Every structure is written in C-alpha cells, then in structure tokens.
Length: 200
Length: 194
Image (cartoon, rainbow over all chains, first blue to last red; front, side, top):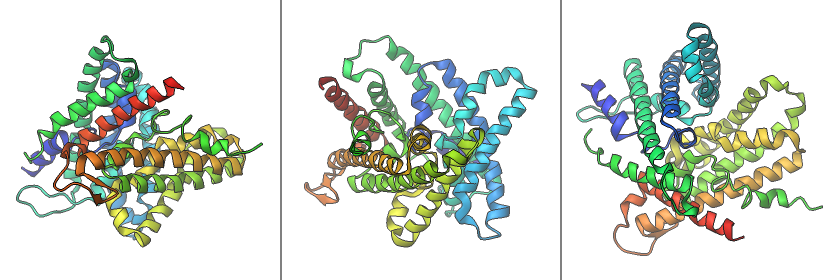
C-alpha cells in the first residue's frame, strides 16, 4: 500500500516539475516538439532511476558509516556525471538505435537538477503518508519514488509539449512570444495539478 | 578604462533570469517571499564569485577534455563550504531554502559563467563578473519574491500591510510561473522600447 501511495504522490501530488520546480531548464528548452519531449523524458527516467539507486547505496554503505554526510553534494554530482558518461558508452555499444534516440539528451542530463534533486531528497527527507510515522525511505521505496517521479516528469513534459505545439500556430502578442506565454501556460497547468493535492 | 561594466552588464544586458533564462529552478522555487529570494540570490552569488575566481586561476592548467568535470568539482566544493557555513551560522535560512542550496551545483548560471567567462578572463574581471551576475540574479529573485509576497500574503519583507490572507495561489506553484511569465513580458517591453 505504501508503495502505491509513494507512486501516486510522486506523479500527481508532488509533481517534480509543477510542484517541486526541479528540472525546469530542459523542460522549457526541449518541450517545443512532442517527439523531442518524449525522448528527453525517456532519458531522464532512465538516469534518475539509476542515479538514485547508486547514490542511495553510496550514501548508505560509504558516507553514513564513515560520518561523511557533508560530502553528499560533491560525491553525488560526480557519481551522476560518471554514470551519465557510462550510460552513454554502454548504450552506444548495446543499442545503437536507442542511443540515436536518446543520445543528444544524455550529456544535458548531468546538469538537470531533477537528477541531483531526487538523489538528495531520498537520502535526506523523511516521508510521511496517511497512517505512517515520518521515516526515511528504504531502497525499494526509494526506487519506486525515483521511477514515479521521473514518470511524473515525463507526463508533465509531454502534456506541455502537446500544448506548446498548438500554441506555436496561434497569434500571440509580441511581448508574450516565446517563453513568457510558455511560462503562463505552465502556470495554468500547475493550477490544474493543484487539484490533486490532498488525495495522499 | 573602467571595469565597472563587468558588474553592470550582469544587471540588464546579461540579466541571468530575464535575458539568459538560466537557473530557473531556484528562481521559481525559492521566491515565495522577497526575503527568501534575496537569501537565495546571495547564496548563489557567494558560490558564483568564489568559483569564478578559482576557475580563472586554474583554467590555464586544466586540459581541455576534462575541464567540465574539474569546474563542477570546484563549484561543488564551494557549495559544500556554503552548506557548512549556513548550517553553522544561519540554520533557519538553511532550513527554508533546503534542497536548493545543494542544487546550486547544477545551477546553469554558475557553470555558464565558468565556461563562458571565467576561463578566458583575469581573476579581477572574473570576480567582478561573478559579482555583477550574482547581483543581477539576486535582484531578479527579490523582485519576483516581492510580487509574489505582496499578492500572495499581503506583506512586504514580512511586514503585513493587509489583514487576512492574500491570494494564496501566488505563494504556491502556479503563482511562480505566472509571475515570472508576466514579469518577463514587462522586461521584453522595456527592452523593446530602448
């Protein structure tokens, strides 16, 4: 049951883009076409899940036993950068077609704050759901949280890309062209997502 | 020739928020009040100035291929220093800004200035550039925070001027996007007039 609550809350209630403001730069940057948006979401999904598992283990078995928690930021970002590089190399070898699809997005992901954000959140924040006391996530829950969060990222990204494709053909006042109207659209979307708050 | 234009450029011409549109995550997330925006801006400026100085010093020695990882390590070091300082001296601020302090590491402004400015300019110029961009970022964040605070909670830097609640949506997520969007429109208008 708790896994389900984590899942729903991470996708809808605490949507990483619309409620937590993580990963906004790529969200605004590559969301003008639906096809690139899906590609980016796929790559982000993959990297967030992998990075969260690796950094969780690193934190649990290396940093905490030696009392080095203050190194979280620096070690996590290095692990993420190395991981992204490795995923790129492995993917190139194993599945060239997937690499073709995700390739251009992978280097961008290192500086996507959603990845570092989720990695830090699962090791520092206590979670509380209806009926349970606040507690740290275990590895299984952290993985579910990472997957759900990245699905939420993909959902918001694809919805927004769809809207933006329609927006492109419309006659927008000059000062609103480009980013301002996009931001206002996201604002309205975020308002819609507020409707989910309170279910978990 | 005066070097002050390195500082003033960061304000209008290279304004990180409204012109370069970098570092959107902290811009949207931490501007629930003017004070929070100001604090986030100052924290970023601290890292920006120090990392600009160090990177401009080490840039000639760093091989081209590994420069990005090196820069990120330098930035992450200063972020860790900042985290420890804030935990020691301003624990309440550290608590409010939370996740977004460690996330300064991946703020594109900091890496952007390292890659785009500090690695080909002198130490003094890089420090001034860090100061200018940092101040520009702080100013934009404070303005956004100010608007959201006035509309959302009816107060000004914590001083309440109307009784009761404001329009709560402006303190929550949608307000962040809307306020930034409309401020950007005003900024565009202003630039178009000039």
